[in-house]
Image (cartoon, rainbow, N blue to C red; front, side):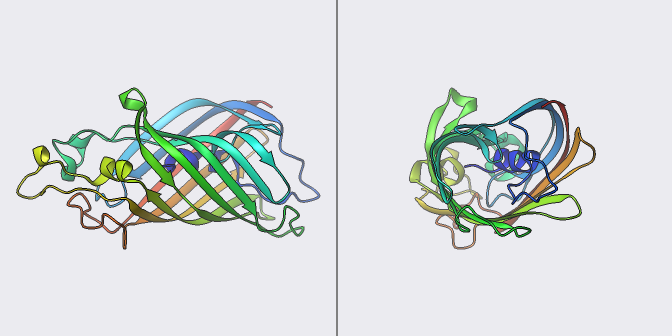
Length: 269
């Protein structure tokens, strides 16, 4: 399930937006360091948060085919003005089940990474109106693997998303998105199944189903504070209303949010 990693990458790299005449093109590559704090809903439907603070180096590369930029890392297979197909990688932080009341005594939720193709459709045909924002549709289909369990396959996800990105005259870059997250039965089991061995009086056994996992709204923002320093952040709202596993005993809240804020320093570009 792409989520936190993708949101942080999008905010760190700044949303794609139509270049203005006074703005230079983005550099081909950047190397630097970033520090950020994240409060992430443990999983869609959870009533508890996972809080992380991390500082680490980063590298961005905006090549014609190889890309490490907003939305993760990937290899472009097809690049046209209006359409693009790439093979990408993203992921989300995990959580210890003993820290989540609803899952206490159950297996931990590992850090998940995902890999697979993504189709991007630029609704302006790749030629945006000067000064206007940019609309795009992303259609990623990806396999999900557990980094905490020797990359064990956890299932498949399909996450269609509509995005709007713009850079304001005040120096802020932002993007807003609305999307759906669909999961196969194996991935749904990772989040919502309760095997009989883990059932209790308050947590009856439950067999998860494939289908809609969550509805998602997101916002990322960034602003350059100087040529080498940049502030960035994201907010995301997930809802399991109408989801295939809304009746799972592990679902304690219909709607939940995740937020993150950080600062990045560019060493070389």
